Image 1 (cartoon, rainbow, N blue to C red):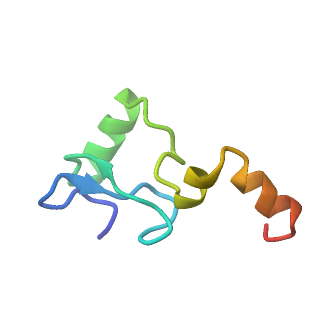
Image 2: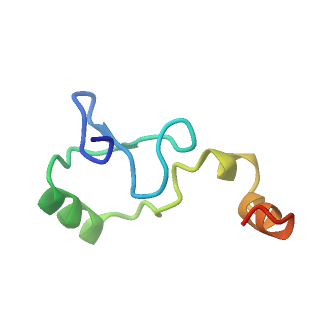
Length: 68
């Protein structure tokens, strides 16, 4: 599954998957590992969202334009 770390030490967060988001660096290979990681991480949930790389308010623009 995309949500568990692969052999490159990367995994996807709970929102979206490739190509909408980019993987984060992680060694979490189980649900327990993910919970431990989330307790100590400073990486926001939306960190890997491709559309957020365009501009900080990309999500708000989509919402305003009726996509959400």
